[in-house]
Amino acid sequence: MRCRYTFDVKGRIKPQQTVSFEVDGFLFEFYVERGFIRNIRVSFEIADHELPRVINNPEPGIALHVNVTSPRIHEVEEIMRQIEGMLSFWGVEAIGIRKPKHEWIAENEEEKKKLELFNFSVRLEELKDHEIRPVSFDLIARSIIASVKTKQHNVLLSFNKRGRVDNKNEDYIEAIYNFYFVIESYYAGGKNKNHAVEKALKNSAEFNENISGVLADQEFRTHLPSELRMKYESQYLKKEADVIIKELVMMRGFLHHYSSKRKTNWHPDKQHEFRLEAYFLEQLSHNVAFGIMMDQAYDTDVVEQYNELIRKGKNGEALTIKSSRRSDLRG
Image (tube, rainbow, N blue to C red; front, side, top):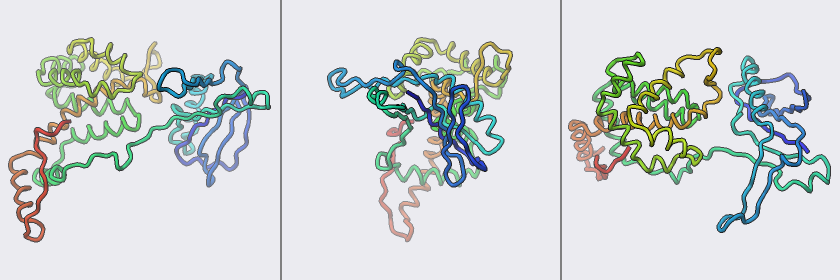
């Protein structure tokens, strides 16, 4: 019996030819499309106890429970990370190491009878178009009016935007950097040394209020992935704001430096280890950036100019567009 992992390859690596080969029990195969490697497959022999199990009707309301094993996955991940780094010189941008397709391959009829599951894969699904909530047009229009009136952009909105994209792309360390820049710039009064930033954040009543608001946000806690909720409770909910601030600043300092001599270290390709921290910082940064946006979009002159545009209309005819009230909006 064999287990096979299929890793998607992002980038444009164009081999002259490909040949399947085996190294130390690992069989490497390549799927090539239009001349480019699209995925790399790694397979190896496994024992019967490493096969997946399917349990029918484990409890009321659940049709079945799938117990998927991932044999030697940590060993294979380390190999694939090194392959990713070495092949980056010839066009590989990334290899989908975190979410490989799992397959179990029977090599004869007797082994085939033992299989309860043949393959398994996980992928992120974005909301469908019809699931996206519409945005009130007045918010779009007033954002444009405010931008034209100021004729300059607020860089904190850019940092916040980039952090949100980083989280979506699972680049959690990059997200932490961008969100931290928002917090440090907005609350720390120009300080950048760790001890000075920590002191400024602790003395900021507004930042302490921001932290309290996030901790009290049940919706944020509910929407956390289930595997992070227990960690969130111990790492944030059970701590005072001063402790949380100190740990956030220390984490930023930890990520700002790298040394192979450290006993504990971070890895640029193991960003999922900082997922909870990135989610928490996103909430803090979002509250700052959302406030900046709201202050500009609801500026008295902006609202008056928007209302005047609606009254005049494109062709001199009054338009009827429902406007949002500030009190109805949440970050």
